[in-house]
Length: 301
Image 1 (cartoon, one colour):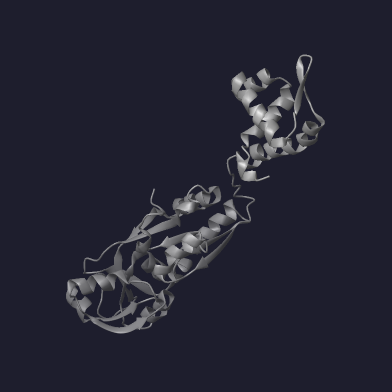
Image 2 (tube, rainbow, N blue to C red):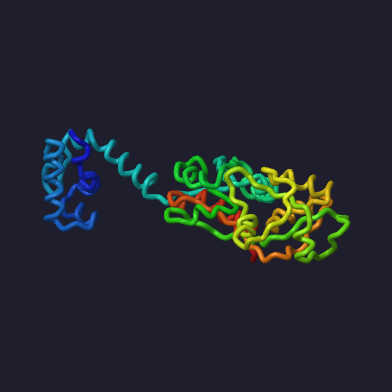
């Protein structure tokens, strides 16, 4: 028998007849008229090639075939009710689920300590795995399930099929060492243009500030290009080089090193730090919990 030809509603008909032993009462329990119930029972008899229920006095008695099928039908219905129709649940405190998050190296250094502290309190068995990859590969990773969430600046994910949630807006500031010989609390454009700069250009990730300068036709002396944000701190600490970076990166460097941030004398774009995920996970309760927990940590009140 081809299971594609089976109307699963007929199992409800069978179950109701077992429970009520009456076409009328079974139909009432299912919200069906007596003719509709009788029609369903006829289809069930044809399907299973057995009378199934025979009138005996005031009730419909199950045949041996019906009694034989009864446990299996009851199990199918209970499985549908308990496992399929019940809303999905997520218990943060007991879940040992692993979530994979796309974020750059500075995100790992800047965001993960706060996220891990939160998880230790609210979801101590939950596991995280982070990945860094070129920006253009993020969409495929989220679509395929290789990653569950992207956290940071991912403009390529602003398209159909993806959701996003704002965490913070990060303006650009300029990092200098604590005792820089020529730059005080503020810096004018002449100082900025004459200074020696270090630029971070991670593989596969666009540098927003550099692109903005190119569009504006602004040039300056770039002494050093590096590929890793975390290399920036010791370089700024130990030299007179300066670097223009998003505020969240600057905050991390100021907190952990002998550097300071000064306003950048160039009106630069603001970086939107966001969470991104594929639409297939929009209704997943565990994913929704993690998104909400991260948003509480980093989004302004």
